[in-house]
Image 1 (cartoon, helix red, strand yellow):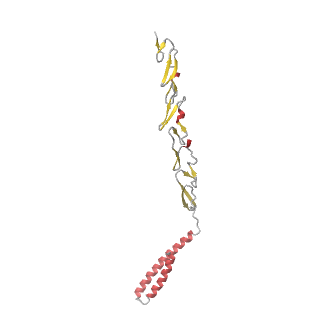
Image 2 (cartoon, rainbow, N blue to C red):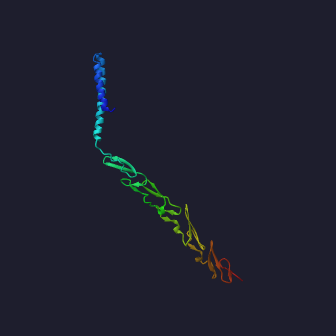
Image 3 (cartoon, helix red, strand yellow):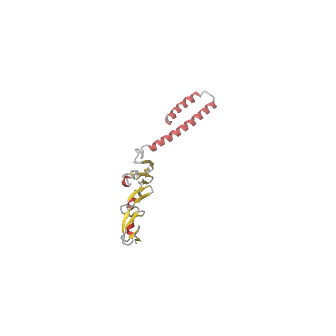
Length: 205
C-alpha cells in the first residue's frame, strides 16, 4: 500500500475511532485524538514529499537507458552522461578499441590494459608493437636462434662474434703466403712450401 492510500485509510479509521470514543472519558478521547492527529500529520508529510519527487522526475529521460557506452559503464550527469571505459577502450562512448585492428606485428597477441594495450612478443622480438626483430642483427648470413633473453647468432664457418661480424680470414692469420680457408669454429691455412703449421709459421728444413 502506497502512502496516499495509507493516508486515506488512516483518515477513515480516525473518523470511526473518534466517533467510538465520543462517549468515553474526556481524557482518553483527547489522548486518542492527539495520537491520530500526529499520525495523520506524518503520513501527510511523507505523501507530500513522495508526490513532490514524482513531480520533479516526471518527464525526465534517463541518459543511460539504453546504455550508450560501447564498452563501459554509463554514469548519469547533470548535463548528460559519461562513460567509464573498460581496460583497452577509449573515447567518449568507449568505442575505440586499442586492440582492433591488432597493432602487434605478425599477429602477436594484443592485451588490453588501462589506457592502452600491451603486445605479447614472441622470442626474438621487442618493441611496443613487437616491431623489432632482433634476428635482423645477425650478419654474414648467420642463422638466428630466438630465445627468451633475445637471440643467438649461429655463425657460418670462418666467422665469429656475437653478431658473426668478424671474418677471421680478413685478419690475415696465415703467414708466408698461406691461403686462409673458413672452417667450423675458425679457419685453416693452406701453406706454401717450405712452410707448415696452423698459421704457416713453421719453416720446413
